[in-house]
Length: 382
Image (tube, rainbow, N blue to C red; front, side, top):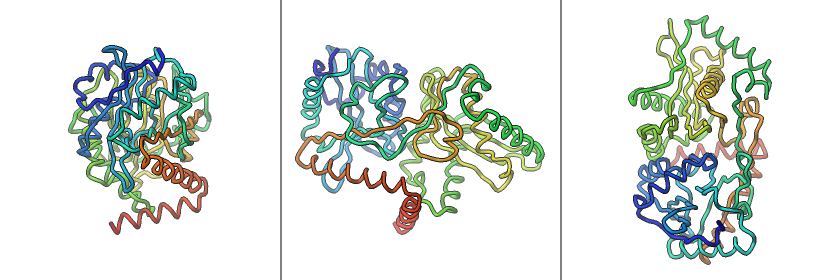
């Protein structure tokens, strides 16, 4: 099926397409960040309307792009719900769709623009992989610019030993033994996988506290501080699991003995199919810092993911040393920018210029540190 053969529609009543949306979600290739529960939690927490551009043949939807409309100084931007908390965006595509040629792509773009005319000035699909899980994105020719962030993954094999053989296995095993021995020396620990809603929400609040304190100590802005962000993550915890799939679940290391109950590290994981995604993590280094509880928690979460049949552990976007030490796969992401109106052409130019500046800053350690300090001071003033 060709993209330009699809009937493109802007859908405002999401309930009318929920069954088709959930059917598309089941395709392993499609990103969990475009699942209906993820998008609904985001727009509900931010009190914005959830829309979708769909491409259909009869009653069957083969293409679905969830959107919210953001008002900025120069116009309206149609963007994917989730914002900076998305890690990788594919849209939702049926496997029956084939990569369009230049003419088909031009007609498809025109149909998308027509569906959004009067609603938005610019369409932005950010953080899209041009190739994902061995498959080329059929809309890769829409890529406008490389995103300033890459994402990092570790393929999961049948056993922990086989998985570690892809990376620095000897060093990893040694670190793990040292970490366990050091925590055992101060009373031991439990690996906690929260099962009740109360446990889940309590651990999420502990994460907010730990992360906020640590970012403040480093003079960095706390992206988890806004109330809508916290509401969004709490809503994800309340979303029922679909088998092994869960928008968010909380894992932690809890100390025993003299420090019984102390939460040394927390992480939030999402799962869709074989894909496990680390959404966030934090540590409290006031006790047992020499044991690197955050690193230990990653080991335990990866080990459990393997036991549960997952095939990929994703550390998400952002270039940190610990991700390089765990991952042997780096995914380059791109942004697709499509002007809908004259204002949108101006917005597109501004967006691309801003992305180039962000990329330049992130590739310069001193500039990046300066930018982070400036952001932190501005948030405090606000």
